[in-house]
Image 1 (cartoon, rainbow, N blue to C red):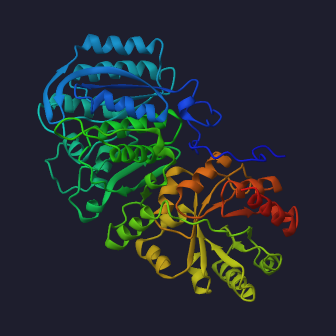
Image 2 (image 1 turned 45 degrees about the horizontal axis):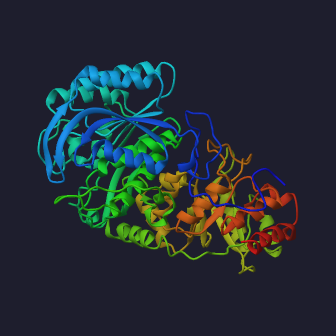
Length: 552
């Protein structure tokens, strides 16, 4: 039996990273909370005497991810649920002593900052992170706590703002301000006309590789009254992602500590090896679930309550827009439908999915019983549009007498629709490259649409279109495409099936009967065969597919 295709599939609650991380690859864990050597993160932040925000919230969020958080005190606050009465920054030598002690024994993968309260704390942090980075990768997540939502004592003066701009942001990997914090960092007045995408672009000029402007506290626009929208802008060497990250707005008044929980969740996800955009998806999930579980403590806003169950809750899986697409009524309605249907999707049996670049082969594959057929002709030098048009027309005409087989045309959507094709498969890069009116033309055409996904943020983005299916891959290593992605494995495939809210098609490295069986047992609606089509006949693969259904 091949590696990775066992006789049984145990669906893990936890996904594993889809891109290589700065740290050595580790076997996927069945339970983050049982990690015998959890990743270490530091949080340099303030103490909230009311137990809602600051290091209290950071500790709860880190525990939900099963990472070890070292709380480094930068300031003590006198506060309760109704406001902050006073802020007492720690002396610089006390901040520096804490950091130096940790550096000798508990070196971090990620450092997260919250309330810093003094330029001296900024300087101490910059000294230690520069020293650490000489020998290892240490990521820096900055939650710029510049004031309290509940009001009260001031947290940040102009000198500290300047230290953020000149010292912290150039060293920053991920910055997580709300709108007002973003405006203050940029020297803009409250309520400026700049959009979150514009604010994020301006902040990236100051150094951070990734920005997330959180919008849970902003319900001014019509779309934001129904959805909690965060704008993410990630420009990392191995992936780029921009868009609105959305979940339903929750009517809770107990929201104290949401910003701290979000940044600490992102830091914990990064420490577990997830890419920046994936870490933001996980942070959104964890914080939304924590807000939903918020509780009363005092007369004002109570704290949010982070817990590990978010990772397996389909209702916590967000959607992500393809860039700054308009938040019109149609888009919001589509997202609402996807988010509301997250736990109601019914399993769909699509059968085996055969992929070929030869249109002449399609009728024989349909005769052999393959229910899903894809014509995948990749653009290459010397391939003319006329030749493509002829191949697609031949594929559509050749399957007219096979009504029980669905023909999917890969990528060449305009030629496909002109030829009368009724089903399209597109990669996310191809969909992203389309203009807004082209996307709408496809959605309005009535054609079925399948989208590829390789990571958590691509899964969230595919969900935003409400496609007929979402492909998950590569499940195993494949030689048919040169891709940066790590193999998903059966554990990530099972997590996709649980969280996608759409039928999931398994693709990549499915070259043996045991793997076909295992993908169905993991819950996939279909398994894609490419090279495997030349290795055995259809009966062989159908038997393997049926075996997975019999053992489910």
